[in-house]
Image 1 (tube, rainbow, N blue to C red):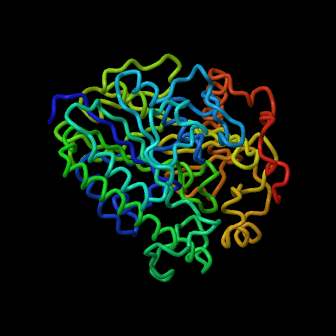
Image 2 (tube, rainbow, N blue to C red):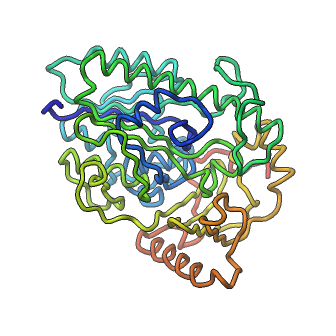
Length: 431
């Protein structure tokens, strides 16, 4: 292992969840599986919010979206608070060259959120990979350590669909329908499209990892692979059920992090920033609410989490939810009248979204939900009114109340106002 300050290469794709072979899904992703075998795989890693910008804000600030300000997409008026430093800013201040490739979703201006340069505007895997190859080829022995944020757009829907040309997609008859969705042809068609896009992500990872080896940078680069939230399918993206908040996390640093290790401790993506900063011996800013899990990478004592908090406020529609997940239970509270399952517009207007909404998700959502994940992992049976779960409900309800109060959650004051420049879609949503 090199004794120099390590480079940091963060690969984060769009709407992936844990839909990878190394997490037991029936899709071949050999390059990402190899990365898992060469590093550490985290099996119980969850995002704070099942939507791209707010979740990424937690990765980059170590705070939940309602704490850092990005409660909705930046292009719809939301911003990270000026006094909240981001990961690229912190690494830049510590002497790193910082470059973003593809999507970053923190703000309209990459420089404002902390990047020195933009390495690639396109987020397509086929465009991002060669841009990273060129970037790595140009590093020299005199170069400062780099932080490269590699934002791959797949497997996000394209034109509200997944089954689009240009991807190596299998036949719909060859895929497995996720158990939280009805097994109908329109769902299988879109899942097959997702497979094709995920294969493109795997190909990009292969090119990036190969170039790290060829340039001699592999031994001195921390590689992190993750995503923002779950698949862009009903009951996943936009909802705080597990299919929406479960996310992949792989970390590799040859000779330092364990090889082929699997950890099942409960983690939140607010924990990534303090973990990385602690390893790099960079001060963790005050106000960070994530907790370092560095001992899981380097050994030593670790005070394991017993819960993670979940939230969503705005996506393309007001959908205020706050919740908590433990290893066995999930409690969710909705602060507004909503349909049973909220579908972001890219899903709702897709071929599967409208059909499923009209046939499965049209009823009203209860204000409180409680699920026993040990017996009901797909969150189908709401136990909130079951007397046998009364104490559990009271405990989790109280923890959410205390969290909201301690973090000055704006929902405590009523409906969160829409930023004045917010997109008209919030007033013309088809529900």
